[in-house]
Length: 338
Image (cartoon, rainbow, N blue to C red; front, side, top):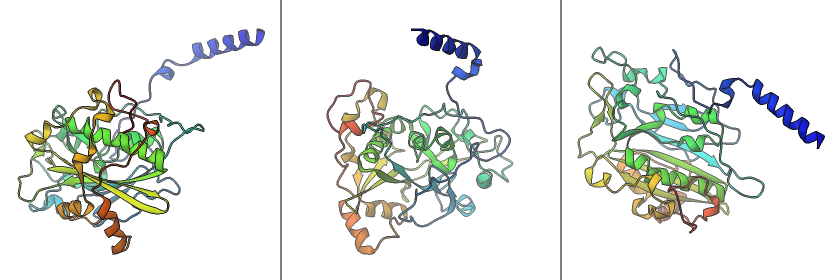
């Protein structure tokens, strides 16, 4: 009894002595004066974000949570290139995060920064532009959030599985494109939840994601007058890869956007149960994404291996039992397996 009294007294003293900020939730720090990520970052030992070697490789960034191929100064200057202020592709590896009972562990995260982080390496996007009232890419998204989000290619919640600091580091424009808000907060988010469940079930998942432009359609941009123009993709792709029994398997998905007809089909995650999302309607083939983007995936593999991956890539999602999920869409999801 005395032990319990002493322990309670000590706990009370510690609580009383703790500074006021100690009980506040974690928050990503602001960037300050420099144009660099605010937290130290490195690819974890054994991780290989672009294991399968995506081509072509443009302005490359390799951080702890992802590898990014960003538009080049030549793309920015060219009237022919649609890539303005956005990456061409982002790739990353995610691993299972389970406790000793095999239950998913929800990683610690921090409140996102008000302003996303700018990089000196991408200053060519806004440098030499006397017409701009506000420098940087973040300003282009201001007052656009109702319709267009700063859409992660490598999800913050996925990077939180490495550390909350790496989660903060995903808020950088080499990892973002303008994404239709209901898609970003709905079907795309539901697929991110699914990817976590796949990592928990199969041990590892590799993701490749990026923008798609239709050469026959005009490219709109986000940005108020006096801010940087950032291109709005006509669609977004995502490819998920697992390794099972020593063999690779891939599934590919295409999400249309920038079109009123497609915008209406997306349902926000907050009000839609996870099990109500049908990813089969977005299923496509790797070859179709290559044709639409000019990218080449899995160049580290033989042509025969690439052909096998492509053949099954439009088959829709793998069966994942509900016990492997961490986050799930919907306030009261059912217990059916997705």
